[in-house]
Image (cartoon, rainbow over all chains, first blue to last red):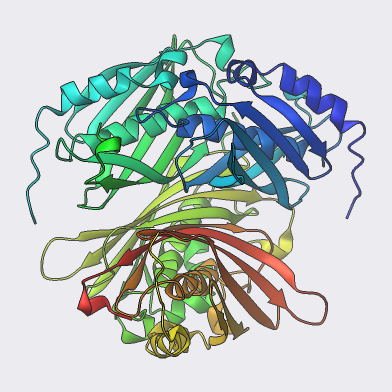
Length: 149
Length: 149
Length: 149
Length: 149
């Protein structure tokens, strides 16, 4: 198995994150980037809700997909890029809290397909509450400069 | 099988849609509400993008989940509500276009669990392009006034 | 886009199907092979049941995954092969019937990733009953002779 | 939250497992039953293979779904039953080995919906190899004596 040197993935991921219109719109911040694991946080905002006043499932999906996608970026060479092929999300508790934490972790690295799992938590006064889980497949894209980063 | 009268579901769905902070933030409109089928549209906006400038997967998830959830609302009695248990989304083409259409349709009605399938399309100069599909499980919630509508 | 000639995919798929220990064990037959669509049928057998006497979800998964996988084979060149990356199955009604039909169809062709959707039906005296749906991602494998067919 | 007493779940699960035609056909054994976690093992057999000679994805699904379903049974009262609503499986490595281990664990208990995650491993000479993961939603069924156990 070829060992891939991901280089300075932290700087690349920070730059890529900053270029995402959606992350800015959601008020999301990149709070942790380690090899194989990325965390994103965002505060609750009434703009992000569904009809019951909880965090919209699409917002949860945005946080989880970005966290999982960037977790995959920590494993690939600087010239490559990641595209999400698919994800599945189980919504386990209402998205009610002061802040939300999205953690993406690599379950299975691979040269073409990387499998990642994510968990979303609501943060507030008490202990963190698991609100959703995701499992997703990411594809490594090479030789497409238009998609680099 | 008990026949459920969903009453004036169109008015209820319009009211519920209008109460979603997330749909307003995304610039989304409810463009079609029929028994078992709902469509939502939104224009492209750089605020909704991921790092390659395409529609963020979370935005696609938001449109598909809302369309599928409201398709389920067209089948339930006025006092009941719908919660999404889970969904899986396949991303098939980049979210690139002038507008986007999200269609949710009921695959299997049920008194407790409703299965819905959704498709997302990019609209522009040429023919509509399928960009994503979703399959999701919705649960009918009864006797929880806090979740009505 | 390069046009791929799948050659005599029917013969290849029949040969591949015949080599599957699992399809023989399940009593499954390949009943239809067309470009982009494959059907498999199997009779009910008490050996295939879960604890309530219905068809086991794993048997449903076997039928759906094989139907979807072979639907993908109808689109690829003779030297290539297909591996399933992932699938999601919604179980909608108990697997109760005299026979079962599994249909796999291509939703999105692609040179590397092919997205397929499947439906499983119970057959008996009355109309066919939809018991499950699947959405899956298949990867086209090239240059791996050990996996050809 | 009501505390549910699952009673002697081990005996119930053993009895239920023994009644599954599919588990016998696969040569599967129940090797561990604890509150919230169940393991099933089966030896490799050419009858269980797909066209490349690896364990068929449907067999992997059967092992994972049964392990996750029985993990849910460890949390419910003796009169209730479990039905799988849906599951998603990521296939990460070929199902090649002497034996296979399927572990199901509860991620989120609930009075109506229980979310479980499963992992499948190939066992042989070296270390256990992760070949697949599953995330599934199980529904607790009450008041349906025909489905008890």
